[in-house]
View 1 (cartoon, rainbow, N blue to C red):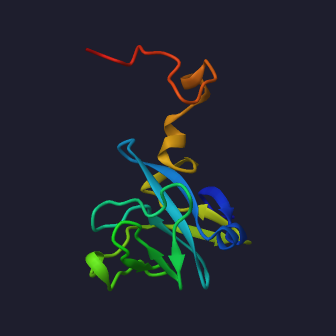
View 2 (cartoon, one colour; view 1 turned 90 degrees about the horizontal axis):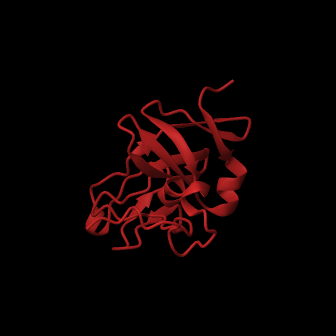
Length: 148
């Protein structure tokens, strides 16, 4: 059996086009990862264009066209299986990989440099039920975090 956190299935990534989750590095910092379809399963990449740190998936799924991830800022495209870019402002750069393993159709986070934080983006990791005790999603339940 595979070591690591079970994330999702290969079928889900292929059906949805991408799958977003959040990891925590060894310093406790959060970062987002996208899983994208590849011909032999899926690949995991840090959710950031190396050109200007633009998020590739801004919460609605990564834009993928003809097997390439499209940066929403400048339109540079990255090979979804290799991570390389050969066009636009990001030409000559490569996405940062996050190691995953597929076993029996399930995708596992196997990169030992990070740990699973949550499904979805960083915003979901920073919000917990205790943060919003009044039930109103538009405003904080307390203003005690404001300093003058």
